[in-house]
Length: 382
Image (cartoon, rainbow, N blue to C red; front, top):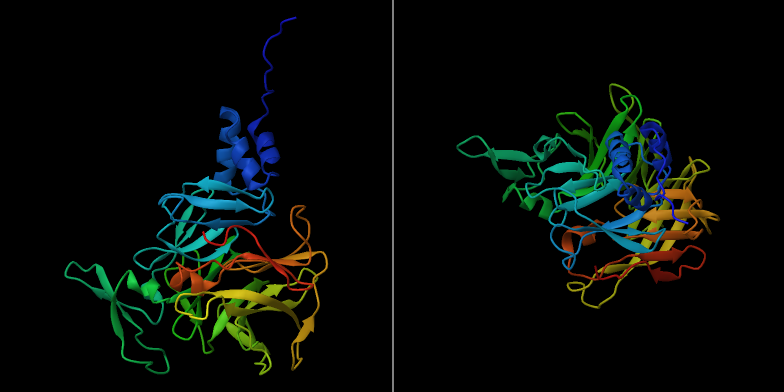
């Protein structure tokens, strides 16, 4: 018995967008290739930024073997790699942060941009020359030709300024790490930058024309943001809270430094049950010669932040929760991702690898927080 070919029922685009919005990114991209109407709904969904927001995190990287124009997206859910061709190509841009679907990138002029590698959306951030320590040097046509760095602070000169080409500022590791946070009052984003000298913090809202330096403290390593407050942590366990919600920024000290707290890397994260956690990493060189080796994560410790406590309180584990550590906004999530392991930390390299040790073995893996056993996540030599 013969019959006519099956025909897909035509759903209104708004209903189809509701269905597609519930998909993980890999499934969403596949769905957009099914037919013309599905691709139209997929494109509209991307342009509106309405895709599922609680995505299982993915690992994004570039590699010489993949080619100049390819970015690889490793799905933790499917344990497979997808190849993207974002514009501009990311291979020669520095990536200094990842939050809310955006990469914070630094181009070959040392200028910063937000880039969504899935949708292609780009947002230019205020010029690096508006950060207090960078002074532009103009050529005869009044174009920025070089940078003078560092110039000065409001308090003192640091050392004799250096003159460098525009591309060299990023290679000098001026931009250490960046974060993107929702700015509820404006419905847009706040970008926070940890930068040299002395790892100060500056911030800017999208569409600001300059960066604002947060004085007077320094030596920060990580940040998180909640209800208008930016919480910044140092390697010594200091935590400062900056209120960014008012016309003038105010700061209070949540806790001071701890002489017994001396990790190789530290990250601060909001606990799902409330409060803050400090996550510390202990590292070792895989090779006796540090010039040819990279620091590898050997142990991860968790500390609860208690207001007013002189010492950090170490905790044993995070039952039914998952940590994500790296150049992303540090996350601690309830284990609602079927493919991921509870009481585990998924981690990637920190800023030192990104800018100084590109030829070294990658520090990427999964740590069992119960016994600190470690396993590779993907091939470590990307």
